[in-house]
Amino acid sequence: MLANIIEIKELQYTYKDGTKALKGINLNIRKQTRVALLGPNGAGKSTLLLHLNAINLPQKGVIRIDGIEINQKTETWARTKVGLVFQDPDDQVFSMTVREDVEFGPRNMGLPQDEITARVDAALKAVKMTEFANKAPYHLSYGQKKRVAIAGVLAMSPDIIVLDEPMAYLDPGGKRSLMEILSHLYEEGKTIIIATHDVDLAAEWANHIVILTDGTILVEGDGALLTDPRIIEQAELDFPTVTKVFRQLPEINTGTVPRTVNEAVAQVKRINER
Image (cartoon, rainbow, N blue to C red; front, top):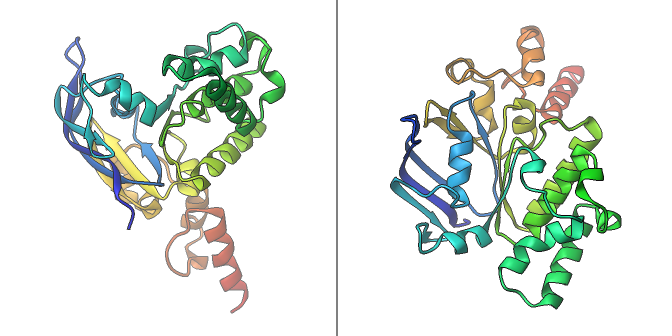
């Protein structure tokens, strides 16, 4: 069994205006897991992500990455272990060229130039942006900027990659491209965590679901959580599209309500074989 790469105990965080964003989060995440954080606006998803990358440090409670507690002494190290991709790439992509932008992180790690070059080349190749290396980011599409932001994270060679609403504002082609990138990273052994409102994405992609409400974890587990009416109502979420269809057709429901396309196809095939 894989060890926990992230351990969070009683994490609390209050913003300066008095907003209590996190109210005692307890969460363990194993290595090479695909995690989806779900919940309504204001649930604390983005605040939690900022703690994983040590942009926010715990006010109360403890976070450990690979067994090392995150604090002021280890925050720089934490950012080499956990790469954070913001929702809006314009918050992250700011250099004169794509190559310079992707170089920023490795250069600030103090790496030699030959290693920086190798990391940047590999990162740009991974996100299929090699041909844009010398272009100005402001000439790129939104989806291309998102890929550059991911490349900047990959060049740091983190074990954990965290993305806030990665599919926001992407067209279908951009979404497919991003999913291919995430699948490749997972196959390479990365732990990937996304915060999202997209229950279809969570149902199809994640193998660990964490649902937050009002700064606490309502429930966590596998994708079957997304077919539970009580949980969906409490979390102010919606059912995955596949689940909604089968809930409207109880006469063909032969067991567990499906949540993914593959599960639905398998269930329809069983019905046809009767």
